[in-house]
Image (cartoon, rainbow, N blue to C red):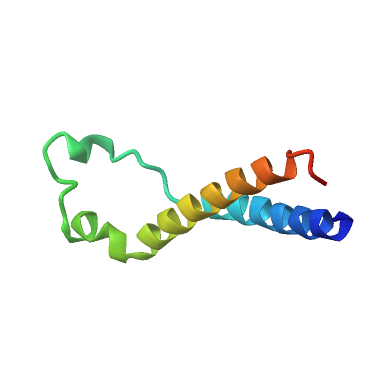
Length: 79
């Protein structure tokens, strides 16, 4: 069981580092004054899920869920 805890801890540390890197790579969500007049609805605004930014958001959500699950598993007193 000690080996499993070590493996999960290493995976947890890797997920933490990747989560920090992905959050820092993302752009800010503020649209500026262009959103008042509706100028934010461009081609890139509508297809954001298919862009690199959309991929970063999806990866961040997945890693955040994995982070929470690993943190809960590592805090169980079964090891």
